[in-house]
Image (cartoon, rainbow, N blue to C red; front, top):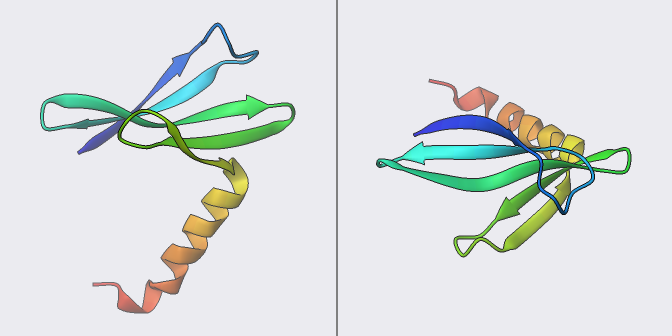
Length: 77
C-alpha cells in the first residue's frame, strides 16, 4: 500500500483541498481529505461508500496519533 497526495480545487469549497490517496491492489481509493475551514485545518475521513464518517480538527488528530505511537514505544521491535 502506498499513500499519495493530490491537491484539488472543488467548486463547492472556498479553498483547495489535499486528498490522501491510497494505492493498493491495482486501484486507488481516496479515504481522506485535509481541508481548510476558516482558520482551521480539518481531517475528513470517508467510509467505504464515500460518505463522511468522521471530521476532526487536523492538529488534534495528528497529536492523538503521535500520543498513540508514543504509548507503544516500549513495544518496538
